[in-house]
Image (cartoon, rainbow, N blue to C red; front, side, top):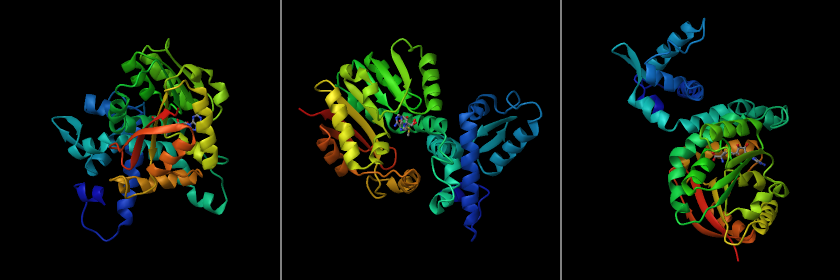
Length: 333
Ligand SMILES: C[S@@+](CC[C@H](N)C(=O)[O-])C[C@H]1O[C@@H](n2cnc3c(N)ncnc32)[C@H](O)[C@@H]1O
């Protein structure tokens, strides 16, 4: 394993279970330290003196010892700092937050889902906040720059983001285009994050958040004056009900939008070999979605589905996010 090869404590060994063991623990620890802001504090203060709750000082010391042993921090001039390895891991921390923070709990029960002892969604579900925050961290680095390029030259007055998560991308598009917007998410925790982000940006007067099912287009009258719909990692949720359901949804959406409106979609291809780099991420991404009874489609599948649904695929690019597809479609004539 790459991590096992990089950490200073690693030795060549013939017990690969411990690579998995270490990866699990580091994924859980780093993802939690990121989302609580503890990593930011560590970088800023060189320690957690002001952060640890009363009585938790021994835990702070133990965490720093653990992170040192696993090559994530080093102690220099009286301060703890991230090692180059930790900086490299942190650059992709969104993937860890998405996996561990968003899907860590249900993944631990995947055997019970298999045997029917428990059901996904009924007994155990994902953590909406972890999914929203992790997705936004992934997107900021790996999706936003190519998405902004794709939107270059597209006239935007009003944006609807279906499955907006914490709405950071919606905010950045609205800001760049000086446009108004609506973010829709079915998960109450994601909506709370989105409202917090929008208020913090002082954009509450032009961007609204609605906690609702994006499947119910009747509930979005704003579509009639919307020139850009964003659907990042949302349409495969509709595809879970079958391709005809997705085609029907797209037809319904196209029928409600003004002529010339655009649809910007991000998805992940199920094929680990295409686009390049997919093997880093696709097997886990595809498995997590299979756990939720969702399946993924490759680029040619999307092209055909858009066409059947009343949209023409204008451009598709493969962003830095391993295996991902970013597609700009336009309402067909
Ligand atoms: C993977 S996250 C992506 C979040 C955001 N679009 C981004 O790229 O950062 C998918 C989001 O879609 C939301 N979602 C899933 N099904 C939905 C539905 N039927 N209606 C509205 N939101 C939905 C989830 O709650 C989640 O926040």
